Amino acid sequence: MKTPPAIATLLLASSALLTLTHCTKNMNGPDGPTTVTANNSTVATIGIQSLLFDGDAALGASNVWKVLNVEGDGAITVDTDPVYGQVWKFYKPAGSHRTEGHGAKNYQAAEGDDIYIGWRSKLDIPANQNTNAVFQWKAYGSTLPMTQNFPIVVSTNSSGNLHLMHYAPGKIGTEVWVTPLSRNTWNSMVLRIKVSRDANIGFIEFWYNGVKQTLVNGTQRYPARTLDADFCDPKFGVYGGDPANITNYVHAIKIASSYAEAAPDGNGSTLSATLYQNCSYAGWSAAFGIGAYTTADITAKGGVNNDASSLKVPAGLKATLFDGDNFTGDSLVLTADGSCLKNNNFNDKVSSLKVTPN
Ligand SMILES: [Ca+2]
Ligand SMILES: [Ca+2]
Image 1 (cartoon, rainbow, N blue to C red):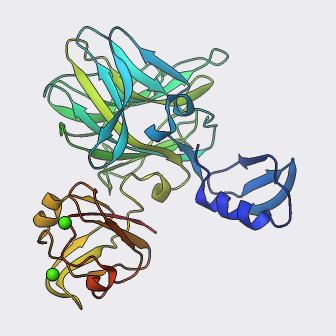
Image 2 (image 1 turned 90 degrees about the vertical axis):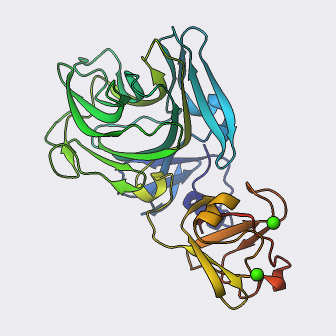
């Protein structure tokens, strides 16, 4: 797991005072204080928000998954996406029942937790192929009754839809949200779960491609029992859809105590960086929110390849410009406006760019 930046900053600040040989953080509550201890003595209590789990494919399977559930000739591998880099690839061949990664290594939610699980997914699947799940919030354990088994599921159905399901005790399913299945393209999802065995306390909220969704009850919050048996864990991949070859690419898996930290597409900010044709912000302009943009994307937004000469970058964003398409070649990082890219030896060169929170 990567060290969250806020923790890293704290450790840096603390290191002048203490020799830290072992550090742990105790996350008692999602919005409560996070206690950082060194050698078992408390050194600071701060109200930071925390990244609770990082499922980045670059960290490797042994740091992300508790168990791999692969049947038949399926495989879980790390693939390279031209935009997002290293992503999980869950391949479930026809005739096989599941290829799933059971997360999250070194993380387990508890009664009362309020968590956001974020990821983006690209499904290579026949148009009307139903599946049991491409994401599950799955129950485990044996000391408490298992009445739901899989309280929350994202799956596809035979009507060509992607839907979010809740299963109440007795495995009574409710379609909480549904949209036409968008195949072979990246779609981001954030699931907020108020984790509870009490349906009067637990709830679900859901964002799709950065937009908070209205759910089946007409509101943006669906009250529900969200914790079953001893504990629940997230699972990603493909479960069911036995007749078909199905691949689910998954990227940017995170569990966090805030939407901003869990969301694959950034913090929901409407900030954007703007490229201009000429120095001093003149000529054509093209604005880019948090994301990664190829030459084709630049053109689609009204820009011109190898022509940008100035750039505005608002506070809170960082722009990385690339001479080559697909984030290749010479690059230039800017965290503030660049009134004339001639000054940076980057005039009329931009062919792709990434915009990230700063
Ligand atoms: Ca120019
Ligand atoms: Ca170029």
